[in-house]
Image (cartoon, rainbow, N blue to C red):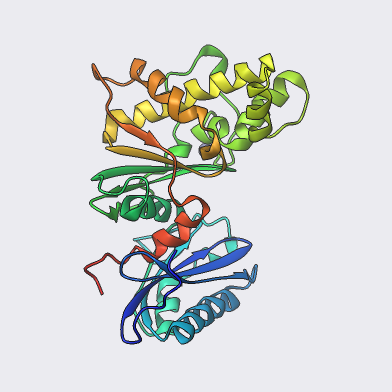
Length: 312
Ligand SMILES: [Zn+2]
């Protein structure tokens, strides 16, 4: 990470990750070096204060660097193309609001807004683990399951603003004991998220044993020789393989990057590509499955990279 500030007259890319509990900002120079980083608490349930907090962060970044910047923002939701309003945000006070317009007005410049999973995929495709790949599927395996699709460096943004919302498709090639599957908050049952999120993995173990656990504790127990934990982890590998095989059959990405807490399970990168070939409709599978390069910073870096290198 460079500590050197860019020249006074140069331009920076400012990325904002607007989370439910904290708002992070990052400023990247033209080569992707971090020149500034900040973090403040999110004013929960207060839309106007959220807009002001983001605007203040941008102003502080520009004051301290002496540079003006492009601004990209990642949110835990999406912008409806039909209405121009935020939808599907679990930070519910953003829903129904024209957040990109209000931020543009506050900052006196165009602001790009994207779903946070899309920002993750943009980051890893721009200068991360999938750098140089044309078609990238970036998956978040955390408390929920989401994904973003990036082609040629740009996030795919369809008419419904939901490209990559793979977590609410049903788990493919279900076994008899996987039908209808656990109830999902979206109103359906057996969604991929109910199996492949961290809580989904832990819940399967808890249903069988009556003992509470977490996904990472379960992986540790498996590595330490716990037979029940190993069986649940094996089943997770098989389910993730099925889920990603479905994606490969449709999108055929060059690289799939995992993010979120479960991306720390190294066993996935070794075993899933061994396993998914039985489901993918191809004689061989050359798709790469890789861990993220930027880890937890990918969301905020991807927001900054919503403005491409030739767009300053
Ligand atoms: Zn669902």
